[in-house]
Image (cartoon, rainbow, N blue to C red; front, top):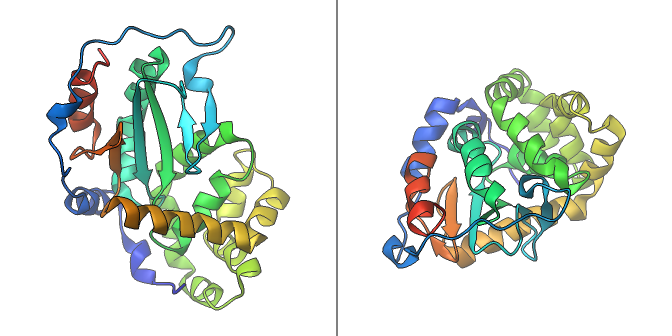
Length: 249
């Protein structure tokens, strides 16, 4: 796995533009998803659907009703400006207005683009499943700051690329300031280092991403799939009308 400094010079604004340009169109018409309004589905007693998190067979993290009639999958990268934009502007209304009703579930899956992306993906998965989405949100919200730290430590990151897997991702995280970043958000330094040192587990995240990208023909992030159909939408303004036409209204 080679390391490229060029990956980390992207700002949120340019990242958004790249993501929107890269996302491919859906192969089938989204009109096939049209349906009648779906009534809200009650969450289990004492729970809210937005607090329910399960891990799917594809190793994605499902937020909400795992049996929701509308199953939305987001393929995202942790070094993608467009994904950060959606996290800030699309995820709150998606969760509050649609996932909360039990009608829509959101499954977050990794589309790994680079070693820093893989390092962050490993860290947000390091701990309880309920922590994955909020940690991802906080990493996306701080993406420009993370890039700035990375660009200040280019030599250390280049050196990390030549290390064996059990030390490579720890070194990347140290150079990117990620150990301290996640420690301030509840993931201890020891826990982070343990997860990053598990080379087989880290590699498995990358391999699953590559396999799913090939199987589904994914070309950009964020990419959304609703009930098995890849969508043209890449941001909330495009995605919400599709959910509403499908019955989430």
